[in-house]
Length: 109
Image (tube, rainbow, N blue to C red; front, top):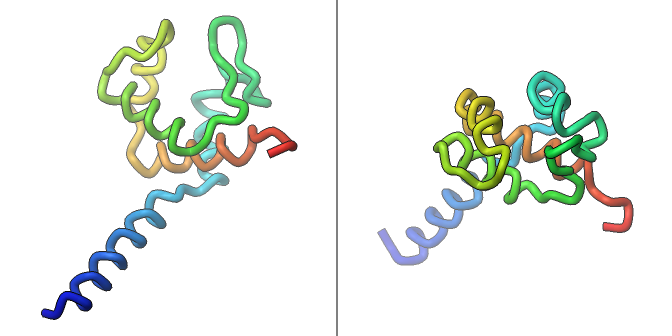
């Protein structure tokens, strides 16, 4: 196999992996309404000690949910988040990240 063929193949694999993790915002909405809305609210503004999700990008949401799923403490509500995140698949995390990052974005961005 030539170097060029290897590079093209590697690039295709990297790009396809990125697309696979893009997430489905519509599916993310369903999961958000099932698990997240009670603490983060319908508009993602947060409630009481639960932080707002406004302007959180997909990478941030994905990172946090995966940390919670791995039982890493990242803040005062980690125990609550861990109990929900442990049930999420990679696909569900990608869907939630897509929903949050597109729905709760400031109009100025």
